[in-house]
Image (tube, rainbow, N blue to C red):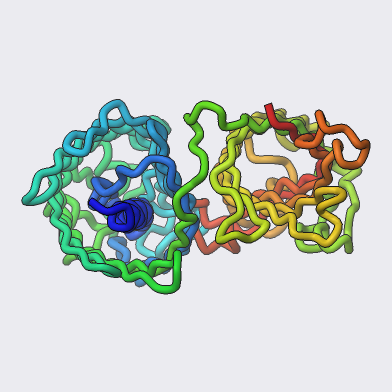
Length: 474
């Protein structure tokens, strides 16, 4: 095959991979009240080293009585490595991936139920049914006539303690800029799972809402998903899905009868073929050490990065100390002075009040660095912006205090932003050895995207920590 054709084929595979990631993510969110099989198109994820960012809106008819229609924003953070993969609702490890067979293990977010601050009238007085976390195993077999898949899930969040087995089949038609994929799946759900999300406990029963335990059941889903490419690296994505719940679920006094439709649409940006992969030999390891303090109430991220507010919270002091490790993804995107790096890290939060206990936080994000300033050839200066997800084992005290004042919920899992500015220490002091060592300032920002994302707990608000850091290349 000529080199040009090989490059075109490789680019097409990369694009399909990213779109598959996006589809898997949105399917996870299309039914925040009734989980749909998220594996409908992940058999296209087989081009290691690619990354992308995007967003999706989903619109659904809730399965709960009197709950009407819902909309949801889902941020997409996409990465497919040689062994590790990440998308908006799951992260996992591939044991086998040879083009025909794929077997992996993962942790995923189960987006079912209803939150305490979003209780439909028919469920008034009931305990919230919280989103959970599943440990999963997935096998996929790809043939010329389609793809077969099987996924086993078990709740590890101690919410439902339920389990589920999903089986599915899909087939793909594709052109130069478009792809179309019909999909069918069946889900075998155990009694613990259905009872938690669709049952009524005896102490929740009323005259119009008798106690009910659906028990195990089988759900069916049919979907159609499509993509269309525009500009150089952008793709539109969309689809429709319809789920039919088992009759034992539809007989519940809190569930409306009939099918559950969902529609979604969005876009994803493909960073293109990376110049480096996390597992490539010779690619430098980036190490970032930082320390910061919580900003004062009302000193939000926009005010901080525009230097209109740099106040520290002295009434309820809280500090963070962290280590983030990363590797380059792409250098000089489209020839611009713009690089993208990927980071995963851990921080320790020291709470000096009794609002919350000390805690650990895990951050995973992609970050762009712009360095095209007129003086950068003398002192390399980087302006950075990172986007990803953040999980804290205890909600930070600034978020607890802020949300309590507004009577809003909190969430351990939130969107993560990381704006920063730094300079090369080697350039400042004339040391070639320290040229790839940077000193700077940044903001560690957690937020729920204005309560528009059920993946992030429908949280409106977050926290900001102003920090100083040193980053070096090992």
